[in-house]
Image 1 (cartoon, one colour):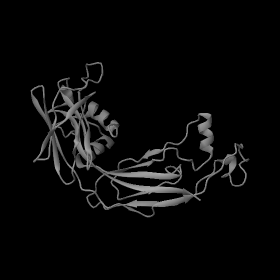
Image 2 (cartoon, one colour):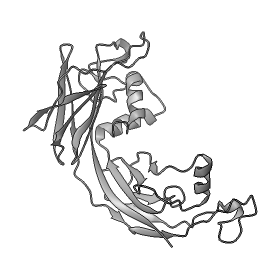
Image 3 (tube, rainbow, N blue to C red):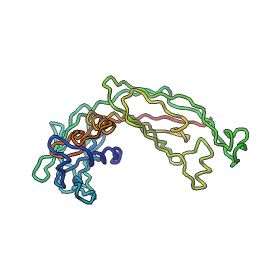
Image 4 (tube, rainbow, N blue to C red):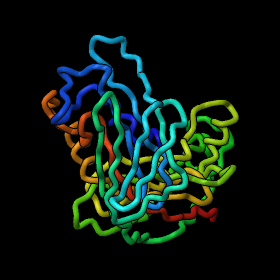
Length: 286
C-alpha cells in the first residue's frame, strides 16, 4: 500500500504549501509526510522525507532518525523506523470512528497532522459470480478464427453483462476501486492471451484500479477487468476530506503556489485515513 497515492505525493512535493510553510521559501529543513492509515489494519504506510529545494539537485533524502508518535487521544504509540524513510508499528491496529494524530519533532519544530477514520459501509453486489465461455484461439489470422473462436483471428469479445457494486454515499465522499484476480495461476477467458504469454507479448494485468470519484456505485467491466477465470478480490476505498481537497486541487485548471492542499502543520504532505471494504467475486467457466 505504500505506493497507492504516489502521483499525489509527487505533486505535493513540487506544488503544495501550508499556512506555516511556503514553497517559495522551501528548503531541506522542511519535513514532507506521506502518511496513510487504514481502518482495521496495522500502521505500515508512513513515510517521512526532506523537501526538495528548487536550488538542489532533486535527489530524495529520507528522514530515518525521528520518533513519530500516533495518538487517538487516549492511547499513544511510537512508530519504528524500518529504513528508507518508512515508519511502522505492526502491533497497533487502526480502529474505525476515531481521530488519529501523527506528530514528531524535526529541526526544533513539532510537525503534526490528524485525520478521522470513517466507519465501514455496507457493500452490495448485484451478483457474486458470473459465468463466461472460454474463447478458444488456434492462431488463425484475420478472418480465420472459425466457429467457437470468438471471431476473426480468435480475438472475439466477451458478452457484456453488468455487475453493479453499490453503497450509501450521502456524505459525498471520494471512492476508488481495486479489482484483482487472486488465483495463483489463473486461466485467461480469452485464449489469445495465452498465446501472447507464450510469445512474450504484453497481456492484460491481473489488477485494475479506478480513478477517485464521488460515487455510490461501480460497474464491473467484464471486457476490461474480468480477463481471467477464478476469484477476484474487490476493494472499495473510502477516502477522507483532506485527500479530497488534495485531489481536487490537483485536478483544477489553475495550480497555484498559494494553494494549501497539505494538512501537515510545520511541514508538507498529507496524513490521511482510508477506509477499505473488501468483497469477493467469482468468474466461472461455462
